[in-house]
Length: 541
Image 1 (spheres, helix red, strand yellow):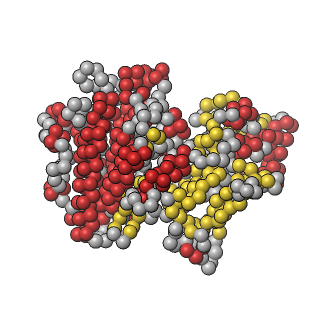
Image 2: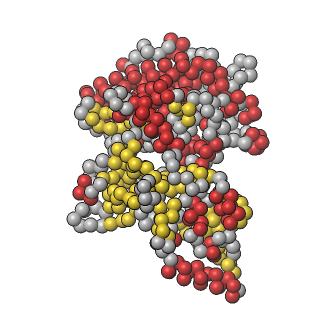
Image 3: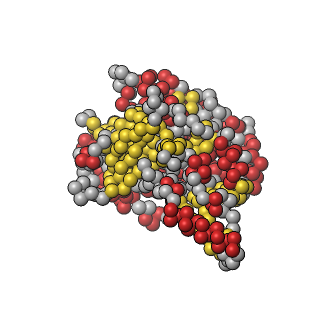
């Protein structure tokens, strides 16, 4: 958990190349020909440099230290969170202790966001009081001020502080700031620029991104110094309890989602804030004396209502799975669309005709992400200790896996295909959801989001308009229906928890009967049954 970058070395015949896998790029050295004196000298210099250089030059993060203490028991981490004294300008730090990483970075490039359950003393690590978020975020060169997520959290704190009943529904910020590394006895801001500056000259050759050369790394760094770079930052917030993916059962998932969306709707009504980054890490839950409460976090890509699609979302490939169709298609360059438009089962995928792509984000984009979260957790399981209860088994290959690719055009076209109709959603997505509670919630949410009587599906409607663009005309109506739906499921989930207590997930699923589910709170237009030929059949219970 304490890697800032990783070294790589390849040998092919007589030549050797050195690679540095950074948070944003892959740096590649020039070839070292070991049959020549110059090439051997470069290789030996590199090996000597590795033997004598500091720990941070090897790619490790000195501010995260690994310990094994018999008195404590399990191995644990010491994590320094830096802060600059405004009066003296000196860099200080506060040390936290953690036994558990609750969210790991699982992509080669991107934000590399990691999450640690932490406490202020080694003795209290079993009952963490804080959540530390370690991330490489895009920011202006040399900037140490608040990033976007911090600015939005402060706005929400001011709007919902005091005695407001929603004050505990948002992540509570404790401290935040960039990470510093000690170089030559002086603290240096940790960023992609400082990482490159600390590399030996042998490694300073070419910069590669996704396998394609982008020119010399020196020119690449000069360009970054005047534009956006990735800066290493840590944020400490009050411990929410758990990520939604660590819930004990589907009922807790439903309750956390319902609470989080009530809070997000309030943030929109009061502050005009859209989240734009909902995922299984953004919705968290907290156990209280009254039961379960959902908590909303991760405002890295939040925006105000009316804002245009944000290009910085492209820097987070780990979020591709949960992004709305509009968010994905806003990243696609129109000139490249026609080359890949053959694999969408006769769906019209001409991006130049997708008027919704250029429209500002709205609440429906966040609700799309919520639907995807439910589908993902229902298909692949929640709590890892109980994930075997949700194996797809003989149903075949879950189509939802195609949503986790790194090509925006492919993912958006797959989502358009799978979400276009009730039949398509049932065939590709719903039948793989093993929790009956989450399955029926997903089916009902899909009906409201994508099967509006005036703009059904994800293709074109009468008049040649894109269905998703037409859907924006009914935003308020759809949001009201979704809030009513999640509140209804929340009450039923609470009833299921009360009936089963802390029983295993399998017992809860068998106790919950979808046949007793009532759709009284849904608009009549959505509950009317369509012909099986036009809309397909609902999943069997």
